[in-house]
Length: 145
Image (cartoon, rainbow, N blue to C red; front, side, top):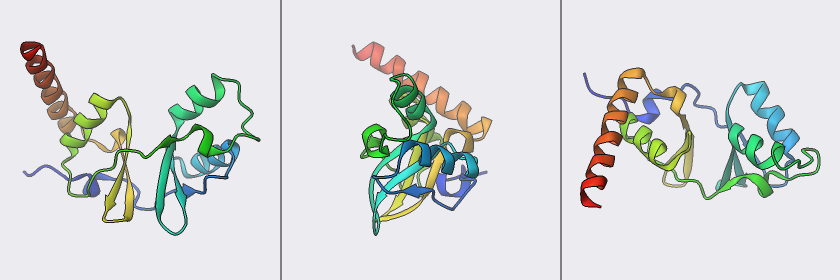
C-alpha cells in the first residue's frame, strides 16, 4: 500500500487565517472555536506572512507575560514558515518536523494555501517510518562528524 501524501492526510481542508493586525486573544478564540492548533497569518489576497501555533501562544505570549488583548499576532507569530507541497509524503513531512522542532506545516501549491498538515494528521505507521528515518539520519551525522 502506497504511503499517503500530506494533502490526503489532513483532517481539515478549511484554512484558518487572520490578518497581521489581529490580536493574540482573537487568534486564540479562532483556534479554540475551530479546535485547531494553528492559524495562518495572511496579508490579503494570499500572501502568507507567518503561522501562530499553540506553542507560540505558550512560549511567546504567556511565558513573557504579554497582554493578549494588546499584542498583535505579527509580534509573536513564526514568520515565513517552512511550507511543503501537497504531494509530500507524510513520513517526509514528519521527518522535517522532527528535525526542525515544529508541529505544523502549511501546504502550498504555487501561491495557493491548501491547508495545514499537523503531526496529529500522521498515522502511527508513518510516524514509525519517520522516526526510523530520523534515527538513521542521526547515525549518519554521527559517523560523518
